[in-house]
Length: 426
Length: 108
Image (cartoon, rainbow over all chains, first blue to last red):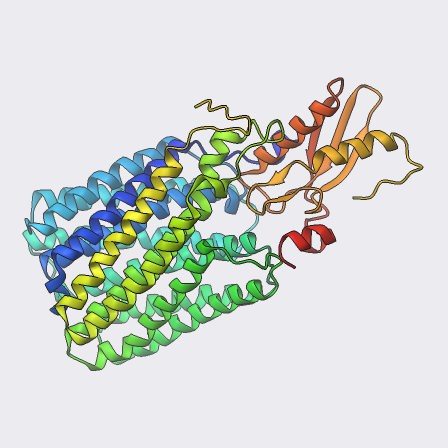
């Protein structure tokens, strides 16, 4: 019967705090960027840029992705989330860890604060991996999507573990190799291990689901899994033992081929979709892929050029173009449904009720999308030309994007139950 | 789902199907009948109305909301009957199961 054939969504405490806090960190990220606009014209290893990158990667990207993953894991693993409590503990750990870490980087205080922040973030990653592992562990059937989700969680633990060692090394030097070289390994384990593989796995499930389009080219996903992991493992091992050499271009090529297979799979689902109309949330997602592809094309340029602007542009395209782009759109393909489920699950079919898309302001989302494109293009132009006024204008527009996003997230989170007869019961 | 004029409970099934048109898939904004999610309706002697249906995605987080919608909609039309919903995964739902109306609503 229905009760035993479908899994129930996890309690909101395992999901909602991540979205609310992620929105706050996105606004903070854009403000911090505006305050440090001049840093975008220099070398990337500065206290303010370290604080900004960790706000983007952990406070914004990982925060929202944790929330979305706890909601989607039961869909992907086809069973209930192992522990809602563990999910909430990971939220507390991640929130405290990011807050301390960002403050420690911004004021550059190596030692207790930075190490404690790093430890908390690492613990959050371990909690996530345990909850995920025990949720997925009972699955009898292996799918490549589960493979992506699981490998991304392992890469997250590796990334945060190495990050913690780097934080300790800043105060109590013990790493014999080059700190900046290990920093590159840490950054790419996070970008190509955690973010890329998680986004690949989740999108391979969600995009066909939202578009009602099936792809039968499962082999493309399997190739994507092998190529992305092979490229990353080879890069990490080679760069660790031999430093950055021209061989990294070969590993980047493997990884790019893995990205290509994944995008071809999504394109195949898109081509066979039944839902013809593409909403703003999906447009955001599609635009984000341009940011990823542009960043991949920059890798040879970064290798052969000594100008710092290429590394800054690379990070900008990945964090603000790709990861932010996908979250800015996908938030409104997940959060309204979670809130709607809480308010209207029991009322469905009984009285006339709003649908999830009515819980947020569609017009505001369209403004957000347009402003986002303008902000990103201006920022890219500003970084390429080294023009501080253009960078400042772009970052002001980004603050506007963050305000639109936060307003819409707040509207969804503060929704009160409404029915067609005008009753508001909550 | 098709209902034959000759089958038992023809009128009741028609009434039930009509009620199910009001149950929407919250993501796609198309009713579950035109989506092809409803596989069967069985009026049993013991006062039970059994709905056999599927979901477009197994373990969809909105699955409970959709099955509750089915129970609510049918309980209003048949208050004397106990509505039961059986979710099945075979045959698996496929976009080909959409009705012409469902395709039109999705822009096809």
